[in-house]
View 1: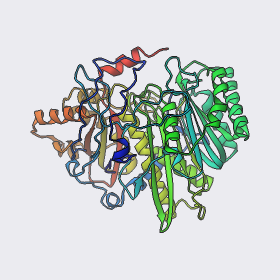
View 2: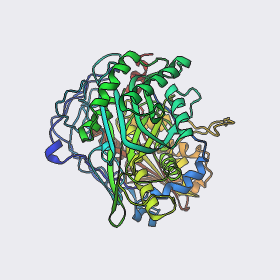
View 3: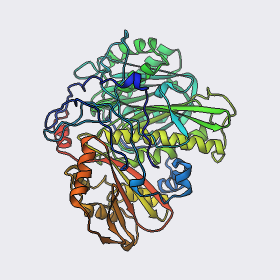
View 4: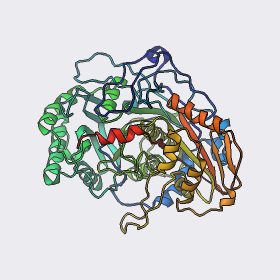
Length: 566
């Protein structure tokens, strides 16, 4: 799963310096400053919101992990699952776009955020925040423009409808399929799930296809009781009326402050206007991506094209939001994913579940599981060709790999934008008994002492000590070793090998002499460009390989969440 860095626009379209990030409703320590020159990252190192589960029934996570992880690997990596050392795997190269970012102390920083040009249009709202870098793993696919509008048969739009507490940033988005699209959903495991989550589960339990997904930002509509559920029904009816479809053809997502109902007067006024301005262009999709953000500093979107067989090409695209309350299982976030491959409902839902297990279930920012997390996947079938009905067929496996790669790219962009984060952390685990065990160790988390009778073992997020050390540029590998050891996976500590970047810190269970200053400089250099810190842990000689993503833990995270309105 070595990473490639993809760009959504050509240099002529996006090499300009985009607008600075807007003043946020959350404070940070230090000063946000824009850089004067672009940065070329070095090669060779590499909201309302919740956790997820299918609305149509639980699936054994460990079995799913073991069954599907290999599908996301490029062919070379699948052939040799013992990947080469980190230093031999360049990644994230080629980004030269500066953008304002969270600061650490008073030191100005530069990031790899993308500037996105949005032409003037008669659509209300501020769409000026930049976009996250595209972090789709390398593979037999190519990145393309358009995110949710890239696949055939979809339109989208985002606008300001007056739902936010302050400011004019877009706050309501709509994604629509031209014809009924096969639908899949992955939802929070939080018992206090929001009204739109309950509503979506009910819809997907009784039908396979839908036409639209409405997303609002500002109010989570969680812990709002019967009145909140009534608001969800009214929201679906408003979209149905505007589009001329059934209310059961509409899915919903909400993000914002828990305990607050949607501003229904504003929403009901905005929906017809939103429906009237739907478009299939990249700018329409970008507006939708911005409209679903809350505390995010960047929007998250991506799309790719993959050849399933000679002459048969399909497209996938997605938008996502999230930067806090991120924790498996699924990690706090919202996402809408589109595809134009013809797939049977059973196969599509299975693909979507497996993709989520290896992407959104493998990220963590703060260990909090929220109330609204939802990922919706729609496939229109508009690309044509024979319907994919066998999950084991070569075409299905290629589609599964591409879908997982897209979901991983979106998931990583959420961790990259973690609240207060200065780096993305990628932890790769090799040598485990199987992929499920490797994935579990890679999350560097503590198993629950008392398993839930209904949800099984629920784990805490990445080691706060390890995350804090990375923020402080302290190569304290002992914290990584300890976190791997309490993951609940059994292995021989005499076989443990730990690398930070390309530096070997521990081998055969023994600490090694290493250049601590160079290791600290590596961490500092990654933070200077909001890059990726690569950790590789080998725990044996088994075939299992896993990957997880997170971010460091900074002073800003505490300040942001201490001052976030309740």
